[in-house]
Image (cartoon, rainbow, N blue to C red; front, side):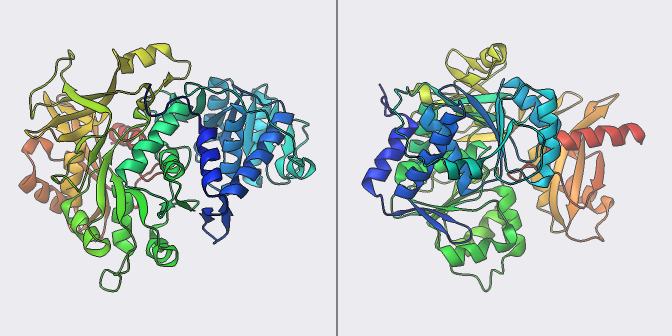
Length: 521
């Protein structure tokens, strides 16, 4: 038995409702608030409605729905029934959505139902034997399989007594998708126990308690979005919820709502620094800001000069459920470092044969947790891929890294982002960091492209701060900072780089674009 015991998600929500029914749980970006009791009542209303549609324990429901309070009501309404929320990226095309519906064998789909969704809905109706598509707006669709939830909820008084299900921590709750590289994305199964364990770790690492206000702007189809949410549920603090991150109004939001904790990534931080007036802004309410993805020391220093010494570097991936490595400020603090294993985790760096490396030797980062809830249950309907990723209880992350003499861990790059040039392994992240240290470079993304002689060579895509900076200036700068074989062979300037929904550079799109350009050139 571990700290999760025999609990499920519903028991956590019930406990907070019992403790503080009239306290505010959620504050939406427009200032509207929801108490814990109101949240429980709304969740019950949706659960009752879903049950009447035939949704029950084990039913998979796909959501392609922007962040909102209503989305939380729906997801937690499903959890009450023991159903499974399948989270689709809101940027997905209709073909992407169709793949997710087919891959997970889902029979229910939830969308907002605006005019832009009509093509998606018609596509799914024609391609898949769905039982019901649920929308929240009135659009004209000639199908008895499309239902308006608002109308359905208004007709359903929600007073049905829903029997408390005997759910196990091992029961599936959510499917979250990994980013695809060349293959289609894989669905990672999160159990009730996974979510509860994630909440415990997140609340502990970020020192969350009932007096905090957590500023949340990550999408719920991302592991960070749900991980932060369950940290809030565990701590019983207030959730300050925004549909999305917006750097241009970040400080305005901070001054208006006074959050104490948030989570960012390095891209967010660089975008904030491009907008904030550091001479006029000295009004931060933050005590802790977790962040992921390493960044240049210059950005680190500028950010903490403005917001205080609040940054905590975190490392995690969809398959690890939560944060297995943390660079905690209360211990010895090292820059550009993932830190030490979080409570309950063991981390190693191994060679290609699975043997543990010595300090400073590059290898693959692997991890395991004392609790079975600390890593994913597996990839949905992909047993072979699951076996390749989880071996003897160890999760193989696909990240290349090393550890130092103090057992602090460092990430060099994603294994798929290592550029192999004439027998040399080159980190794309290292080149990106050097490029972004140039005052005229706003942002950079580096990939490897095919070379007939050297196998691969680095190509850099750059967004400039100064339109007058030229390729030769960038090359000269890199030659001063990098070994000759790491200097980008090709440099291309762009107006902006393709990004994922959480602000990461979309390397897959850069690779596709880079390959086409190299062929044409």
